Image 1 (tube, rainbow, N blue to C red):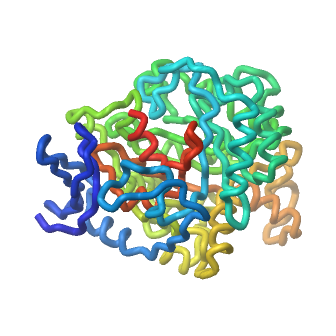
Image 2 (tube, helix red, strand yellow):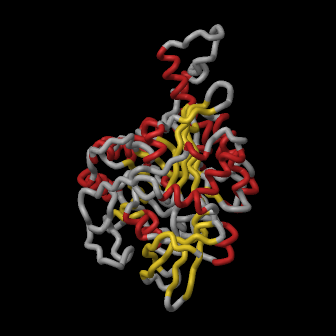
Image 3 (cartoon, rainbow, N blue to C red):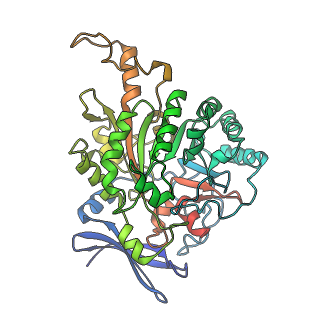
Amino acid sequence: MKKLSTVQSVCPKCGKPIKAYYVEEKGEAHFISECPEHGLIETLAAERVKDFTRWTEKKVINIPMKEAMTEGKEGECPLHCGLCDKHLQTACCVILDITQRCNQHCPCCFADAGKTMEGDPSKEEIERWYDRLIELGEERPFNIQLSGGEPTVRDDLPELIRMGREKGFSYIQINTNGRRLALEEGYAQKLKEAGASVIFMQFDGTKDDIYMELRGEALFEVKKLAIENCRKAGLPVTLVPTLVKHLNMDNIGNMIRFMFRYIGVVKGIHFQPVSFIGRHDYDETRRKEERVTMFAVMHEIVKQTNGLFRYEDFCPISTGHPLCCFSGSYLLLKDGSVKSLLGSSEKQSGVSCCGDQDPLSIIKKDRDFVLNNWIAEEPEKEKSSCCCSGEKKENEIPDFDQMIAYMRRNTFTLSGMAFQDETNLDAERLKRCRVQVYSPDERLVPFCAYQWHRR
């Protein structure tokens, strides 16, 4: 066993801060923590240690937040999270939980939605949240995700979106299971007109047995109907699968092919390896059987698409921690092949910064990345937007408008985020977290720390 690095973690049983280590063992990378009282916990970090070491060597740019909200104490992260003066990275996306209610009861739910039926925060409270976040933002306002619970159970959701846009937030995504989008005629159009930027939709695969296991009901037809209604409205969709080993890892290739069929409206897949939080709580046997690493996801993308994608085309983000996520941007070509849209400098240093060293410019590019990539074509242009459609002769060069329409229709992203739970909580990752929750007591808390705090 070879030690790769030392970090700080917490004991999953008592919650006390303890030392942890990334180690090499039999060609794999593992995360090991040991509590004097409760013993050793070992979790797989990467199936191939060479992937782990190369990925963690990537350049990281730290851009501290504008204002600390609490004072951190050395050696006690994340006990005082919210955000403390030890935090190293400003947020890209801020999550607002606008309800704890839900119209599903999924066996696997990170938020444990529906556990409490406490009243939703009022519009006045949410307006105050928006105003405070405008104060805290740099260069341009944070990206906002309206979440919960299930945000579409609030009938005033269009009003909340419109309010956010009027306050100056240029990107507001809706984190949803898609049920209301599927079943209510015209609802997608209402969200589009209110200013919703993208639908971040729960989508666990292309087979109903996957949904029966993770969501407790057959939902594939509901997902397709939700996507079709978003297509009619010109409202872009990003598919968000929760990946569980032996359940839907072998469905990754089919998910990508499904996206290609809906490429005008589905602008990406954002894979989320299962995390043991909420209703999918920590259990040692299940954790070992179900754990998925983001490295395994990237290799399965390559394998299940017969090399259509290359592992080398995926990058960590340049701001944040390299073990948190991966991303790749692509153009789907008319022969069914794909072209990576990341340049060599981005592949070396991560997505979105392109070697720019001005912090405010970096922040803007960081927040603009998904805004510029997850854009749907206008519905009325669907049949004519492809530059190779119609009666054009072979080798005829399309005009500029046709080329822009083709790019808009056929660009997409593949990305993933490896959320932490209490068995692999790494304080260094928390200090560089870019996805933060605005808590009910009006603090910004790294997403993974927030889930740990409310367990």
